[in-house]
Image (cartoon, rainbow over all chains, first blue to last red; front, top):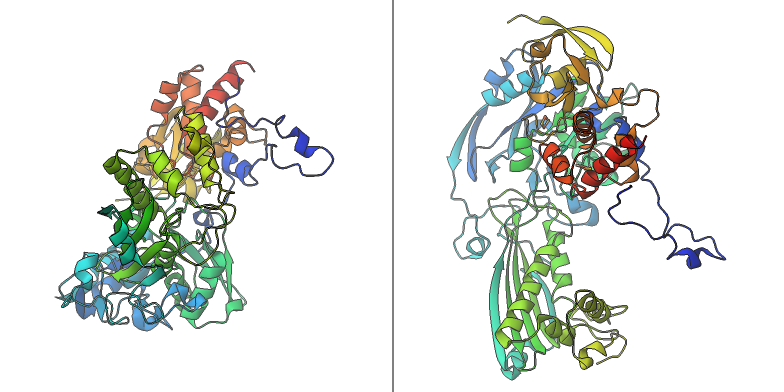
Amino acid sequence: MSYRLSPIDTQYFAPDHEGDDFTVIGSVVTRSDALGHVTGRTEFFEDVRPSGLLHLKMHRSTRHHARLAGVDSSAALAVPGVVRVLTGADIPNNLYTPLKLINVEPDDEPILAVDKVRYLGEPIVAVVAETEAAALAGAAAVRVDYVDLPPVFDVEEALADGAPIVNEYHGKNYFTYEGHHCRRVRLGDVDAGFAEADHVFEWRYQSSPIEQAPVETTGCTVVPQPDGRLRIHSDTQACFFTLDNTALILESDFNKLRIVGGTVGGGFGGKVDVVVEPVACVAAMVTGRPVKFVYGRHEEMQVSSPRAAERIYIKDGVLADGRIVARQVTAYIDAGAYSRHTPYGTTKAAAHFPGPYTIPNVRIDCHCVYTNRTPSSAMRGFGVTIGDFALESQMDRIARELGMDPLRLRLKNAYRDGDMKAHRKRAEGTALIEVMQKAAELVGHELPDEYRRMSSLEAR
Amino acid sequence: MASKIVTLRVNDREEEFLARPGTTLLGALRDTLGLTAAKRGCAQGACGSCNVLVDGKPVPSCLVPVETVDGAAVATLEGVAPTGDLDEVQAAFLEDFATQCGFCTPGMIMTAEALLAENPDPTRAEVVEAISGNVCRCTGYEPIVNAILDAASRRRSA
Ligand code: FES
Ligand code: FES
């Protein structure tokens, strides 16, 4: 007997296959890389083992927020096997932000910290050595003098008057969206909606950072080529994005870099940052030898960027029959110490609220906030997933308060084709009502006739 | 400490090499012998991506100092189908979508091989127990458990 998770009923699709050449839906297609996986022949970046390989390990900040009073690498250089140490002064263009490729400003993050550290584990000195053990011993031997600064870890405390400034490149603890302190969406008159409502409900939702935890840790091996180019073997999820950012950091022509990748041992968004390649490239350039920089599991947990923590307040004005007439969402998304991808994630959050419901009066404020926590970045539906948790928890709580079936509350408010969304776009191809009706049927959840007759094709 | 000469029978081939103190079995396989199927996921014995068979038993090779297994028979994924014909476990993993990124797959397959060698007709609970030291972040485990049960039935009816 053969087991399958989702048996594909090829007969069901048979009529679609007749008379044309659409043959993919309803057929079984083997992953193109699966044969390599089951024979152990897939080549992950760390399976490339050039001779003469050097190992890079990082000396990292032991403080959440501090001025660097002195950095002394002499003891590291004295460790047998250590070949070279790198500081910010060795990086051609030490300041960057990965989304500058789509015009996000300002550059706000150093490759290697220079005057200040802004989170625990921030890289300060890279140590390059003949063996991994020597690189680790060298990294441990670097001495750093700190002058501690007050840290801030809470998004709302970071926005309060008098909070310590985390990131001077922004000058305040939030990202500025076209002159505004947050990403905003406005529709109708929310205060009038609250006044007209029979109930006003406001609740708060909070999530923690979430680590993607891929089984393969973040890393790369850079191999200098005889023609002067650098070949970068990386497990990045974003080859060209990494190549372009690395070229800007190295102040190199784009065609001087070649990236070999696409084989990722799990990423889930955690491997779209550009953190290992630039410094490994500099190490390869200054030594003329291949260099590997790969995170240990502890580094992967401590410093690779997680899904952002979010705090979300949702305030709803609701009529007695369950119609939501006003929704105000105030979200604080924790970027950590640097932007990385969170200004974009925050925009996605603003684009996703107020959820798949038609609400005539909407006010959305999504803040991208800097704190002294590990920089956050991408992870599966970032900016959207936690918002959905908050929105759907809110819907369940409203239903409970009104003593109403939560499915009927959703059906009553579900957007329909032709409805105006808060973002001034007409909804198209919604199908939410039909999906909920079908789901109710499948689980045997009784719906009265008027709910079973609803259609997303009938405008309100 | 001095380096040691270590002899292993790896995938039915005699290997003899010099191991520096502190060399793990994983390090010897990957860096000395060039057998890179076993992966380093954590180097802490927590993920099973480095699992190989030592005298038939699955072990996390990242935790094994190589000189402590001097003289042992070691099996890695490279040796499972040396001529290219997949065995039942590999075929089931391939056809049942039990591999996504593939990074956990070598350790998973070797763990499954050890289970099926000892227990040709495992229950679902026994399969789950056998791979409890193997982390997979992609598949959610269901397809892997299904594939191992599928492999067992393929092998029994072969
Ligand atoms: S690498 Fe050996 S158990 Fe994770
Ligand atoms: S397939 Fe990616 S970790 Fe298992």
